[in-house]
Structures are given as structure tokens and as C-alpha cells.
Length: 324
Image 1 (cartoon, one colour):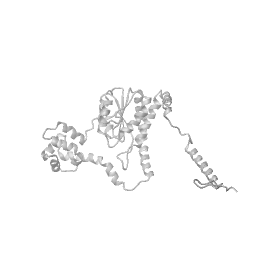
Image 2 (spheres, helix red, strand yellow):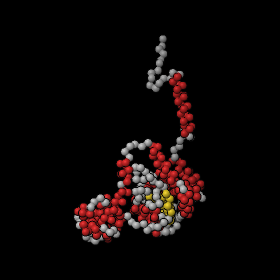
Image 3 (cartoon, helix red, strand yellow):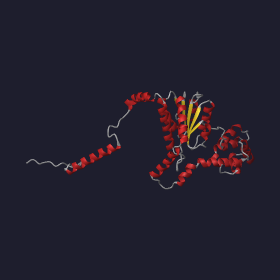
Image 4 (tube, one colour):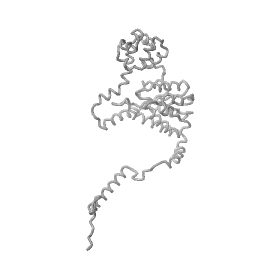
């Protein structure tokens, strides 16, 4: 995978802000904090809002690598369209949907995961993970919880698993990845709306010699360009920015295949069961849904028989015999 993907409009604005001259600083600060507005305003309106001039706005756009403000605005507009997709989806879904419609969407995403190429890539990734000195799991935003699931599942079965973000955000992830290097594997998860920091940290890990695996929804996703291997989980959703259903399935599949390929899995699983046993609660009723339904049917029949025999209803006064 190539890691030469050009930076996006917002990233270019932030980078240019750091090296802008004093005369361009007001324009830089305003654009960095009002990117959505800049995509819809004219150059004159931007100049007025930031307290600069039309010429200074154009100069900053050129400093950021654009031919002028109009090119910067067009690039920002494309970014804004992606950022506002969830809002547009909500506006389009005015009527209630039955659960069947949502399940059909999830089934399409799940079906799209299955391919011979995906299976081959999965096998290669599993081999690298099992042989790794350490496995780092990285995800930011909502993906934090998906990587937490992956890290928690792998942790008992691999010599060293690091949940990089662990709910602490980018800075925490960077600290946990201080010692990442050759012989390690980074598994990074990113779904729309994509996290820029996840991509940057993946590039950092790859530069340090780690094998980077991207779990994302699309081969053109930003994270894919920073990875050595890509596993896809389609995330189309009619309301949310992305669906996590297929990604959860991919995480469970990856973890399961790693466990199957790890020689000591059975021994570890037995020891783990013994360790957690005192903390478990058990279902001592029917062992299967069919058995539960059968038991419920028997209970109902017994109740009906009791009523036919004249059993008093709950709360009804019982008849007593008056002494003669």
C-alpha cells in the first residue's frame, strides 16, 4: 500500500497555519476553526470575518498549496459534504422503518465481506499476529470500543496485547505506542467519519517497522494507504455515519482465527475458565429456547387445569364452612 496520499483540505490548513507569516495568522486561525463556514462563504465574507483582506485570504490559500481561495473552497466543500452526510441521511429518513429493513441492510454489508481475496488476506494477517512480539489495537472515536473488543478477546491468548487508546484519545494512544517497532503488529480500525489521528499513528507505527493492519470499510479509505494489509467491513447505513455491525463480525472473525492458530489456546482457555468461575452467574433453567417453550407450555396447561378444578383466583376470598 502507498502512503503518499495527499493531505485533505483541513489538514493542509492546519499545516500551513503553523508556518504562516504574522500578516496571515488571523486568516489561518479563522480558517482552522471555521472550516464549515469557509466552504460556503465568498472570499469577501471570509476576509471580513477574519479581519483581513481579500488579498491576504488568497495569499494564505496559496501558502497552503492551492492556486487561490476558490480552489481551497472547492476542496473544503468536498470535505463538508462528507462531514454532513449523517445530517442529510436523517433528513431523508422521515418515515419509520421496520426492523426487517434494517436487518436487510446489515445482511448486505455482511455478505459483501465474503470473498476469496479477503479470506487469503485474513490468513496472512493471522499468521503475522500469532508471530508478533506485541499486538497493538488502535481506534479513536467510536472505533475505540471496537478495538477494545478486539484487544480484550486477544489479551489472554497472546504474549502482549496493548489497547492503545484505552478511552484516552490520541495522546494516550501515542504514549502506549512509544515502544512499537519491528516484530510488532498494529491493528487499526477506522470507519466513517474517519479519524485523521488514526491514520497518522498508523504511519508512525509503519515507519518504526511494525506491520500495520487496517480494518476499514473501503479500499480507498484514508487508513488503507497507511497499511501493509487491509481487511474490509462494509459500513453503509441509511441514517448513521457508518454501521459497526460488519466490523464487529470482522473483529470476532479475526480474533477467532487467531485463537485457532495459537498453539496454547486450549490450555489458556481452561485456565481462564477456572479463574473467572467464581464471578459467573449461570442459567439453571431450560438449556435451549425449544426446551424453554416446552416448559412454558406445560406451566400454562397446569394453570388451566387448576382453574377448571375450581382453584381460587389470586386475591379471591376463600369459602369457609360455618360451624353448626
